Image 1 (cartoon, rainbow, N blue to C red):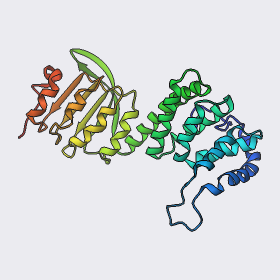
Image 2: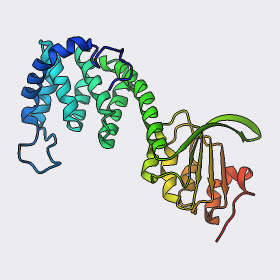
Image 3: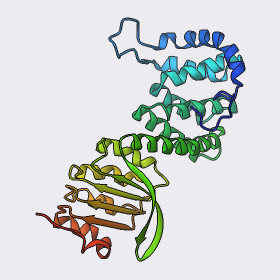
Image 4: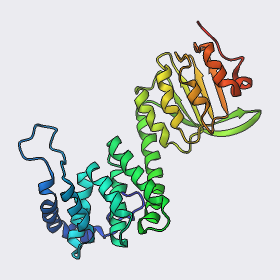
Length: 289
């Protein structure tokens, strides 16, 4: 999946009409490249997953620089299909490679960063971030471009996933430290059908500055993903079961400027960690102990 590609052009920059003609041959090459990499026939259901050995992965990576176009294409698709086992060997190769390998290798990592498997996505993004830091390699600029594209795609996907679970998203105006600010906001309340783990999607919402948590089933475990939000400026906690064990970590969030707590049984032992917000909400905490 490449969000920046043009209509009618494949993710490798090849016209789709041409790809249709190439697919029968490419599929054969793909099978030749990938066949030995997968689990043997007869494995239990759900276990037919890549079990690549280091030599096989290295062979596929070498194929990215093959003389024949179809072999390069087959190797690219095979590495994407292989998934997580391809990431670290490919990461090491991309530290010192030519432009062809850099282009195809970064493309593989970008695809794996959108694979849908959280561990694979994290590993691919980490590899891209590492490559992007080195200004002198062929892969660095391509890695930075890939990360920019991923930010947009992952935010769009996170919005869709959270909305499907019942999160409410809107634009609003709020007062922060006596000044009015316009915010993109997310509300998680009793209509939200997900749980704390689903809130990990919040980390991709770079355009969201305000979060409201409301409802008795929301406890301290729901606060852990909140600290991952990159631009959180205002957090409202209302009518929850939050007692404050995780509030200290939230208070250390670098961009958080206002914290409002209403009608939640926050333990007074949590208050020292929230001292910098005291003027903003001290009269709003309702200790129900």
